[in-house]
Image (cartoon, rainbow, N blue to C red; front, side):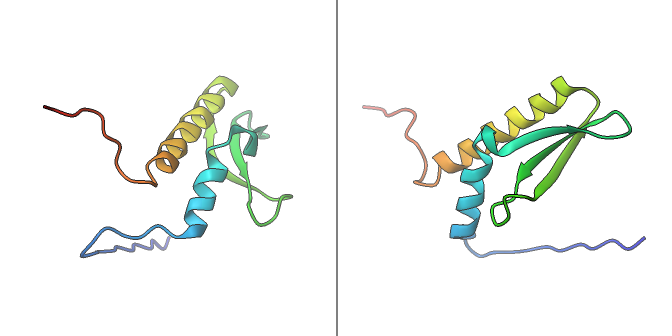
Length: 96
């Protein structure tokens, strides 16, 4: 078995590319996700590829369909938060 490790170091915060932003927006919409049942009985979550609408990219496997849907909901929420913070940090409280 061959393992590949890669590390990065930055002197400043890495810049997000337009491709990454497009992917985050794509993944933040639940309509771009699906669940398929595998021959072993597990359920696999997949999202539709941006460049080829006929291709689906597998993400996770779960024992139940409820678990798979919860995984999709969590992913959608995660990427929605990433998209909402693209404009910078949000002010949550100010003091006088």
